[in-house]
Amino acid sequence: METKHTFRALGVLSAAAIALSACATPVAGPGGNYSNPIGSAPVTSNPTPYSTALVCMAGYARTANITAPRIAIGRIADYTGKAESDGSGRKITQGASLMAMSAFAKAGMPLVERFDTSVSELELKYANNKLISDQPNPAPNMPAEYRRILAGQVPGSDFYVAGGLTELNFNIRSSGFDVGAGDPDPRDLKGNIRGRLFVMNIGLDLRLINTRTLEVVDVISYQKQVIGREVGVGMFDFLGGNVFDVSAGTGALEPMQLAVRSLVERAVVEMTANLYGMPGPQACLSSDPLAGTTVGLTGAYVPAYNNLGTNNAQTREDPNRWNVSRDSDVRGRY
Picture 1 (cartoon, helix red, strand yellow):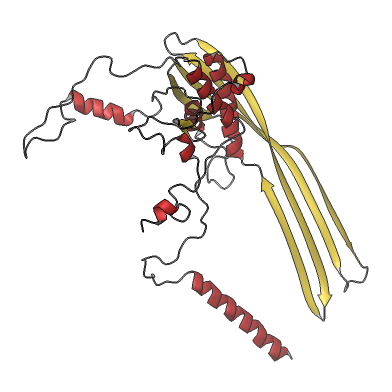
Picture 2: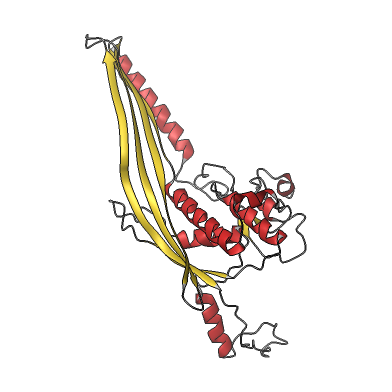
């Protein structure tokens, strides 16, 4: 009997090894890869509960013919000082400045770049040395007309945003339970169930500064709580002389980085409402839906051609568009 069980166990292990070998091999396939990556979820927009309000503000400004000020985004740093214990990096995203750019773009605010000007500065240096041309060379070894530097060609900002993530508080409150039950006989069924909830929060402080005078014209401080949960169940029993120990569980943590984006977008909503002179959320009831425009949940852009009927902000939000597995127009080309 023992031999029979041994052969059965070896058979199970062999089958598992064969199944694993089918997933990844040391020999590249016909396509040149050892294995195909799993997962086929499409790219989607990344909104927060405040994204729709930002898009509404763009519609309000367009309907009311408001001339929006130009905004520059400065450094919105992580001042929490919290890092992963294993040394893998910071616990909070270092991209809050980029989130603020996207938020102001959703609100239809014109942006000027001040966060990363390295390429522009290098091109300006080359242009100043007459090394850059915007025209093709008229002939081999013949120089083209060099780019000229014009006074006032770079538009300035009216306001800029600065600030930082200032709080990350773990385990503000937690609760849980762990219940076990079973027969007193050690060979009979035993079971347990457990659960846990915990709450943390993230804080943000932003300020809006007049670029010309350096006056701080708007200051906003917000915090958002983040919740996590864990649930598990287990069973232990002897059946027919065999030991069975089965457990299962699930856990979820509200995305911390999405909480940061929510904080940034809520602050940008309030700053933009002030700059646009909006009376409040009720102004969204009278604004147009912005159909076929360049402002949407993914941000805003400047159209290169007059093709807004088929390429606009709303089409950018479609998760099936341009996806070879989901868009028949693209799939039909191959």
